[in-house]
Figure 1 (tube, helix red, strand yellow):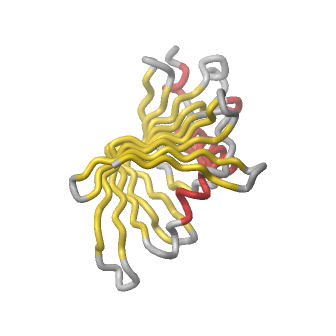
Figure 2 (cartoon, helix red, strand yellow; figure 1 turned 120 degrees about the vertical axis):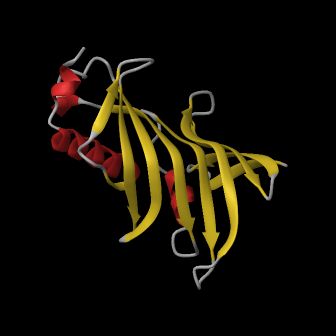
Length: 182
């Protein structure tokens, strides 16, 4: 159970970066410093991560938990990420990078969930002025086994008004169905 403490930090960071880049198109700069937790599921916690989108810094991630499969925990080369949770993240959103959240819906979430908790989306105009801030209480991308579709659920606040959103991607019909509740 203590084997993950002996891992080469740069090799582990590179393995996780590679998998997240391949599966989700996430370009992260992970540090070699991480902590390991066994409970409730084996996970690695990375701090102060830069998220790069289209060659520019897109978000500051305070903490990222990557939950891994217990069966492959003993081999760094076979580690598979099962769930990802970003916590206390500030996304800088403008007209050049707003498609990021929509493009995530087209990724394959049948193997893992992707969550963002206690974060903010800062909307900016062309002059880089802040227009408004959207508080993310919880945002979750996952594969809905019942509908067999990628799903996005959002529990947010904007201007202190709570709202929820549910999006389902139907690529065979080439449409996205959404439910919004203010």
